[in-house]
Image (cartoon, rainbow, N blue to C red; front, side, top):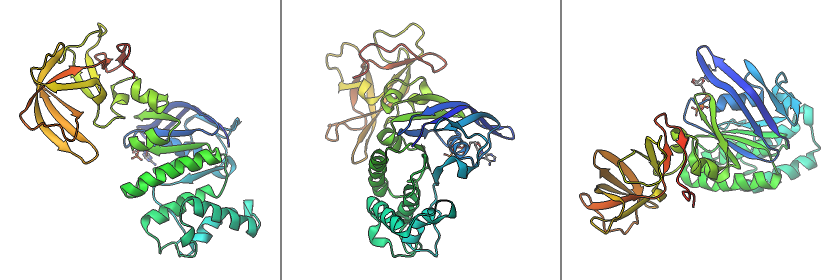
Length: 347
Ligand SMILES: Nc1ncnc2c1ncn2[C@@H]1O[C@H](COP(=O)(O)OP(=O)(O)OP(=O)(O)O)[C@@H](O)[C@H]1O
């Protein structure tokens, strides 16, 4: 496995700068997730690392070797795409064995069999090895596609939303499996997604992208607790962080330049209206939204709206009055940049 370093990587398509002066170092054995909305430049970045997309400027090195001008084959990376691309006429076994049978890296059949079986077991498709690739469910096909990457031990694995076509249950299972496999292999992995749960649960570090730029790079905890700006703060957390203008709620310790306070659910305290609220404001319950695993409480706080979590059994209904208090929120200036948080904000 190897370290991957990008220096000033830039790639434009006409007037669209898909990747803009991006520098990033992925440590050997790291699981880095590039997170961002559609069009942020995640896929293009991955393609630049793979060598499928040429760079307009900048450089890429893998394992300390400059590969900017190297072909994809010379880079020793494997790529898993969003949509499985299997050979339909081949069996699962032969699909998995395929990369090991290429002339460039042909392995003895006994060794191939061992590796194919090990990967199939890891991905729980060992019972399907004899099936034609077309005679599989979507989830099984995608596991074969991931397996085809894992049979090899390249310097770097690149994965572009490999779980996005799967149902929620399978996605959750494979999320855990992928993370475990990556740790077992000690693999360097760069993974693109716009799914915050995948980013939070799998990444050693998350790179948050916005319009081609890397706006913050840090551990999931740093990105969640110490967002550099409003954009990053809204990438993680369900319900989304609430942004209220200063003054909407009484709060102590705010920096003078604060224009906005950002309240995640853990920064919000809800009490019955009129309870001895030292530093709160009255709000009206607009909706109690029961999602099964979470109950979202929608509140109107004067002209402002906010959403937080509540206990599934809380006796709250539309029209109820409550008192809302802020507990050590995040502060942002008028341009949305984060500024000095109240000490103790991080539990
Ligand atoms: N081959 C191309 N030709 C023209 N424009 C492109 C090409 N590839 C990407 N782009 C543009 O570059 C920008 C970044 O695209 P990219 O696919 O890298 O974003 P992304 O963050 O991966 O989005 P998604 O989550 O939808 O895959 C977009 O505006 C896109 O339209």
